[in-house]
View (cartoon, rainbow, N blue to C red):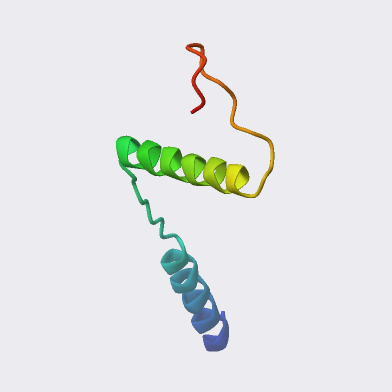
Length: 64
């Protein structure tokens, strides 16, 4: 096997090994849910303020 082929093979193996990296990011479920609720509330406020469709009423008859 020629020397250039060995270097190429070694470089290819090193590149493949270094490319196999996984980064895991975990978000706390409670914080993600709270952020989602806040975004939904902001969207409803924007919609109500723009004269769009009013917010749906809750079962007690009060607007959200």
